[in-house]
Image 1: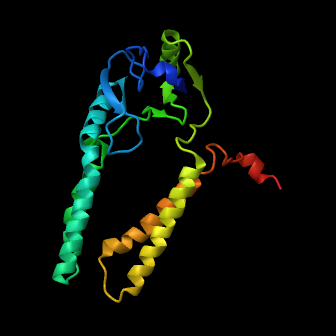
Image 2: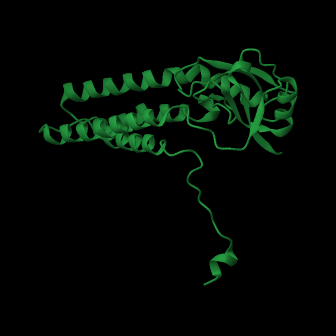
Image 3: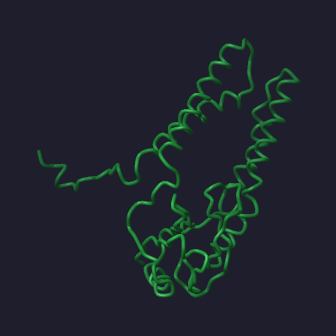
Length: 231
């Protein structure tokens, strides 16, 4: 089944007419779900109501219900462990860490914690709505019902300007360096999760820096076996 991205101009989003075909499979057997389009896991709004196949709909609803709670629960657990570690003066055992974080990892599985479909829409800097990876037949139905809606095979543009990613990259890397130096020079044995935050912040900063590169700018091409055998 051929697939393509659909682009809805900003001025057409409010009055959008959506065909009753699942954007995931193209089948008429569907369920309507409010799919978040913010890009942030803990935000349920804004959302776009879309038809999904029953399996994807169940996972999307479960994700929408649970995702906003994952971050605050993880932060609370982190703070509790940090306080216990600081007050008791003893390093928390590996077994205790496993007992706490394994359930969180289990809930991250799509079959349990839910998952948004690959067709989750997003908005660009101009407010245009982009729905990726639609079956071509479904995309054609959208265009028939909504003149002005188009398709594209170009890479999805970044939702924010390059300066946004540059600022976040610099801030995250600076935070990683500052935290690492503070932990290394405070003269005490620190909570292991604090040390874990150093590479996490650094990697997040590098990831933000990579987002300054336009989508599709870097291409990795592989030659065929015959080309590789040629001197």
